[in-house]
Image (cartoon, rainbow, N blue to C red; front, side, top):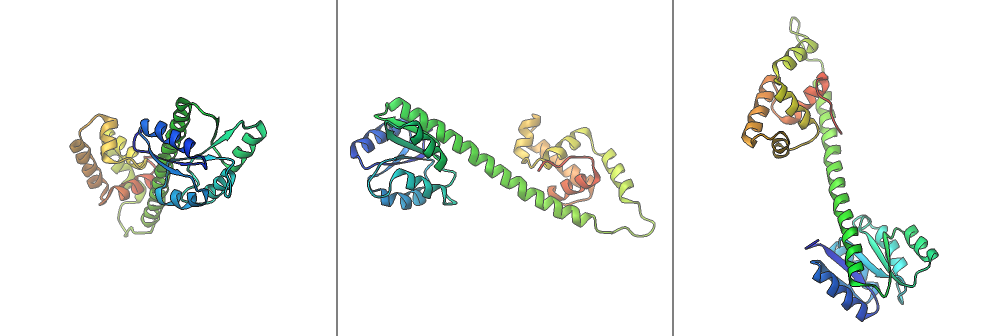
Amino acid sequence: MPNEKVLVIDDDPDVLQLAKECLTGAGYEVFTVVDSSAAGQIARDERPHAIIVDVDMPGTDGRAICKAVKGESILKHTPVIFIHENPTLEDKLAGFGLGAQDYIAKPFEAEELVARVDAAVRLKVAMDRLRQRNAKLESLAKHVQAAIQHYEQPRLQPGTTSDAETSGKTAARLTRRELEILQLLAQGLSNDVISRQLYISPTTTRNHIQNILSKLGVHSKLEAVAYAVRSGYVDFVG
């Protein structure tokens, strides 16, 4: 996975050199640290996508580094891979208990090192994207709920049409395609994603959204989603 960062921590310069050659050849940007006491600051500065650390080192050993990494908010999702000479089952279980994702026995093969780092980095990238999407959906949910509360405030004057009647008439005026787009907007999808998913041009998507706003009598996509969710003719996915 090119351009991803890997931090390797070991008190053996030969191991560091071998790991750097293997991972650089696979497209990674590699940082090596022989002084384990400096590892924490480098990890905070570089935000690596994976950390490879020797379990047995003088001073701050791999277990302490793993525990520190998992205790920091900006690093806790970074996969830690232990390298250890002849690890026992007890060693591995203890490492997993600290939050380590994988174990590699010394001496290691270049292909195995790269394969295990690839797997760890792929998982981190996927999980980072999922967390970002969840954060966006949570934020959207809060905005939609606030907008719904706004629309729930009494605003009808004597002799005007009720909300239920207005909602039913509005829903009837929306085309099936417009309702489909409104449902996708409620899922937090962008215009570009909606266009790709429905196999229509971005211009067509924009035109449909403008029609939706006009028919609902609102000024933004967020207001449209809130109105539609309150009216009950789309489901909000949050």
